[in-house]
Image (cartoon, rainbow, N blue to C red; front, side, top):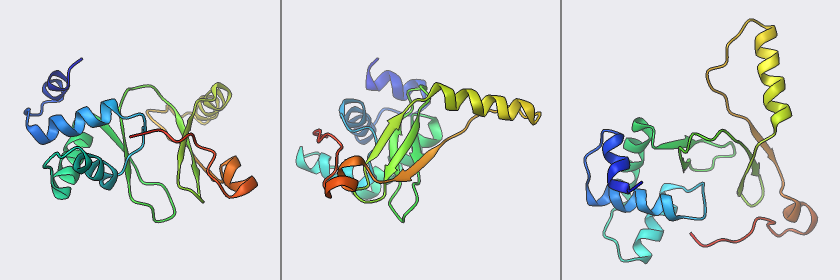
Length: 149
């Protein structure tokens, strides 16, 4: 689906900054990006989008349900990922700051079971695990594959 139709479906007008930011998010191989990351990447492609505009557009995207904001611990800036409706959880390396996604059916099952046993119906949830990626733990170098934004 095109960026324009995604914006319209979310109830947002099609503007150049919105199109550029959404296009970047959709094409990036890095799923968890901060506003500064997006701004710097747009600058490198000679796009004329200000940092304040990036923050404002990301807030609009969040309100419209296009992106999910994550505020991981450790004083790190918020990161955003496209809301593709596929549930996953996150592991955050406290050394290099990289975010790893994972899906673990047994954990999902146990959470639903615990909620049911407590008479609780889950509407949404998130799980963040904090630690060190294997590379940082073993040798002080990030084990996350380096992928271009």
